[in-house]
Length: 154
Image (tube, rainbow, N blue to C red; front, top):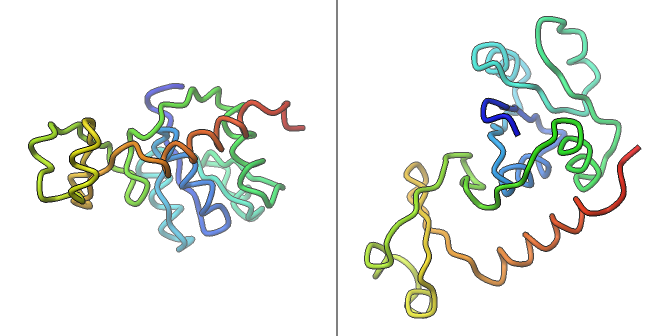
């Protein structure tokens, strides 16, 4: 994946935006059409949408989906842009790159059981949220890997 590959998703692909963040893709989310156009232009982001109207803007890069399902959308965009997943390096809420933090830094900031049973933690400096590899993240990773392993999308 090109390190400068950047996207903006609209309200028609909200679940896809979260999936892409889970695999390390830089993708912002916006529902206001005017803001989408401005951000796409200013930040040189590729618009991801199901809205055919975006195709009218010839000065912008747009990737329009016909699929309703986020699973199929994810597969298409990963194949088309040759994205190599880097799981859980971005905040799933705000898209910020996560910072690895030493265990001592999370004491009293995560549930006690999590603190004593985990050694690796990440932190979102924007959301002030801590992350760790638990059953939820393992399930997400497994689900996304299964989606990406299935045959090519037509």
